[in-house]
Length: 182
Image (tube, rainbow, N blue to C red; front, side, top):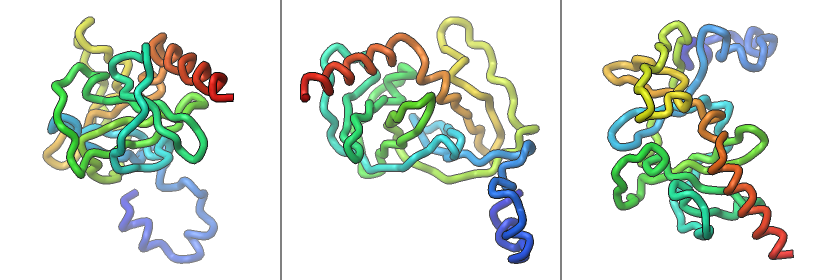
C-alpha cells in the first residue's frame, strides 16, 4: 500500500488497523541509499537512525572494512564502510555521506553510504532472487533485486552481513577496549 493511500484512510480505519498494516506479506518498506552510483535498500525496521558522517575512533586489528567505532549515546558502535565491504573503489567523503545505524542480531552497527535516497514500498512479488556470482561476491548479503521506477534496487540482507568471523573479531576488540576503560 502506498504512503499516499495510507494517508487517505479514514481516521476510524487508521485507529483500528494493525500497527504495521502497510508492511503486509505483500510489501515491505526499505530505506534506499546510493553506493558507487547503485541503489541499495535495507528493510526500514532494521534502521535505528541516520547520522551525518563524522570522524570515528580507529580500532587496531579490526578488519579493513571496519572504519572504526563511534560513541552513540554511551554505546560503542562499529562503523562498517560498505564500499570496503563490497571491494568497491573508495572515494572522499562528501556532505551527503551518511552513517545508517542498524539493529541486527542484538547488535548495533553503522554503515557508511554515499547518500540516502528515499523510503520505498516494495512488493515482495517484485523481488527477484539475487544471481549467483560464484565465489567473487558473497550473494548471501543480498536479499534480492527489485525494480523501482527505472532503477534496480539491490536489497541487502543485513543479518547475513553482520555474521562472520570478522565481525565477531570486532565485537571482541570492542569488549576488550571497554574492559580496559574500566
